[in-house]
Image (tube, rainbow, N blue to C red; front, side, top):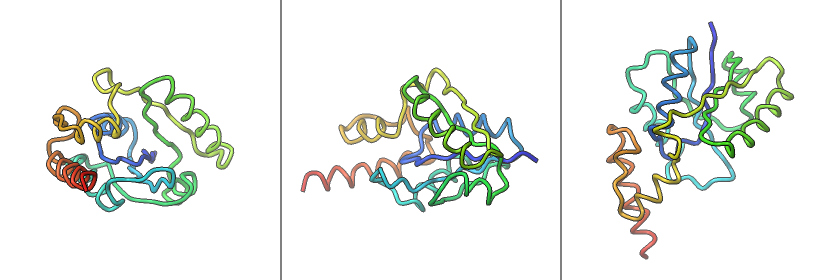
Length: 166
């Protein structure tokens, strides 16, 4: 059985994330979506909230498990008997960073391979940051996020917008 890890901050989950996770689920026996704590980012949603949003967005896909984690990705992968890390790429700029991370992860654990999936053309521009920016400026985020989590994300955007006003 091949288990893959699909890591990310998912703050919030977008159609781009869903696309990569679904495609990975079609390639591997089991996909663990690892919602990470990134000390370099200030998330809008707690790790528990992000995990719950992803569970809603990925409901019905039997071989996908959503969990939160903190620490080294290769340690998390080894603990979960995963030998593949799946990363989505939108642009050349993503590749440079992700390639560096893949080489570092391989140096830390040579049993773990990184597989890159290019984002579908309709999602190439999409990022969580864009969703937040569009939402804060009053734009419609429905084309960017799964319907099942849209209202929760919109509520958080309204809360953040009110905080910024004060």
